[in-house]
Amino acid sequence: MIILVVNAGSSSLKYQLIDMKDESVIAKGNCDRIGIDGHIAHKTADGRELNADCSFPTHTEAFMKLVETLTSGDAKVIDSMDEISAVGHRIVQGADIFDKSVIVTDEIIDKIDELRELAPVHNHAHALALRACKSVIPENVPQVVVFDTAFHQTMPPKAYMFGLPYDDYEKLHVRKYGFHGTSHRFVSAALAEAMGKDIKDLKIVSCHLGNGSSITAVDGGKSVDTSMGFTPLDGVVMGTRSGAVDPSAVTFVADKHGFTPAEMSDYMNKKSGFLGVSGVGSDNRDITDAAQHGNQRARLVSEMLIYEIKKYIGSYAAAMNGLDAVLFTGGIGENAFDVRDQVCENMEFFGIKLDKSVNNGLRGKLAKISAADSKVEVWVVPTNEELLIARDTLALISK
Image 1 (cartoon, one colour):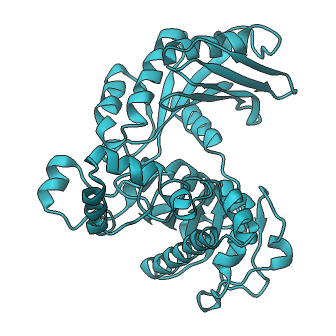
Image 2: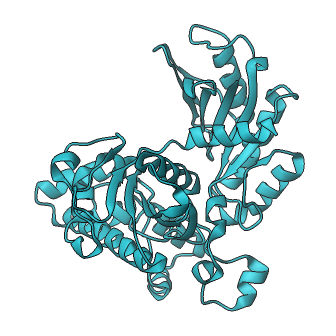
């Protein structure tokens, strides 16, 4: 059974074609610069590649090119789309409406689009992609949507409510939603399997660290708290996002700069974080390199990130009344062994002790990196959101 997994952004359409017989990736690629000019980058499992400039006025043209690339030319991998059993889509915001993956209908697409105010960059693009897919993919091929926020719908009200008037929650749906749920669900389950334990018996702090980062408390396989909030802006300092900031500082800065609300949102989402503090860039590799060469602002933002992650681990251990494991995933979590080292440093009070000989140099591999006498296990667990989406899709269409 072959499943196409799609991750649509406002101007991009990433995809993977997965053979569920052995969960292998047949081909993957990205249709980029949709609505600007257009480009496709496509690669097959056996090493064939296609890179071409295209005309992508909308997501529909991008889907048409995706289909053409998969089924024809030098980099084709299937003869027709009839060989595909289903399409699985990643959706960023499902609010408190969707607590699980669902089969796509026109009503579901409309509801996803209605939530665009809660994720203006993502949800409308998702809806456009879903409609484009329906117009291009054979009608008998079912589609499934998997929501980033669904995993966090198990949070109790005390964790997801803000101290705003209750009417804002009831009428405007203002609350913590959390994000990266697809990743946190995948890696926490993969960790339990690697540890040889039932996830229901584990208390895990999952650290998804990348250009966007979030920390999640996973108790018995369920999310009970997470660092991102109403939007992905909340939590730890990130590539271009500020992370948590005193709301009065936000209104103060907006007033001094003369920003509209939209301009202030852009300022905090795209011009802050690693980029804004360091002045160097938004990529952690550039920050690390600059810090090593004596850039004090780069060093500062690195220290901020480490400090904030430590605080979340400690607070979530308290919230769960225990801690069995800490895991690192995402681009930074899987590859920046110096970040893992510094996060775990001086955490013996929590029972965390790293085996530096294993951690140092480890990149992108599933591995236990805690010392033999560490009471809390520490792991690197590579994430695979596309595979989880494919698994959810298979489970739903099998029913």
